[in-house]
Image 1 (cartoon, rainbow, N blue to C red):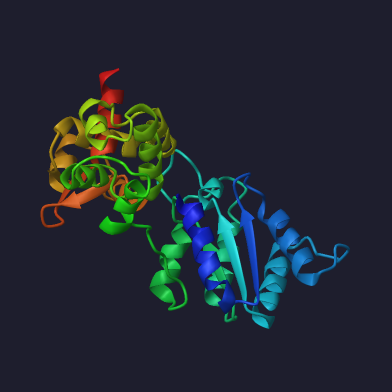
Image 2 (cartoon, rainbow, N blue to C red; image 1 turned 135 degrees about the vertical axis):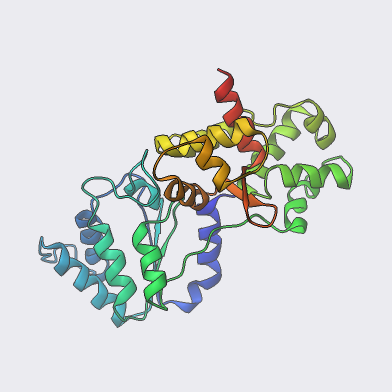
Length: 288
């Protein structure tokens, strides 16, 4: 279960609060004009409706619809309109108009809800959170212990409670990763959690590919910070990182990495480190 599956689950739970639910994927990075055109045709129930080319007019018409009825507009794969290999939140060239959409929907009164699902948060969202009570962002956390254990218990996996807890903590209770791991344990280790932990490469290909997708989107400075944290082998203060990497922009890069969920704070929220699985992935890259 990944972010999209969780969004679908949320949609199932709250759809009764809305008259209409509309879901669109941004995976193929549609230009905003194309997305708005598709939405306006759907909402008007008229394929032949005359839609002006002007983006601002299209956004205004969309908001009129969002005001007339209670809609849930779900936009998935939001990271696809953001620029890879830059700090988090920058738009790809040609997709800057999406900021107009997010700003207008966030600032103007209406009775609907736009739910953006993304591995990265556009910068405008943070600004809107600070300036309006209508915009909120939530970083998906791992499952609670009981829900995480249920993934393994319903399939009759073997292993002590302590080893199962070790496995869940290793993958940060991430349901998508745990399901991948569960499948691997079942297929290759006969359902034995202990054998997997004792014998397996914990960042095997399926897991490594997930991390690699995120890693390839990082800026050069973010990657350098990741390498620095991995090579240190222990949590570091921000001042330690500054001494190790004497470059401008460290604070912004750390904020970006935190937003991506690739680094975490420890020891009184003052030290930074990598998640254990991410640490293994980065160290493997360093050893090549």
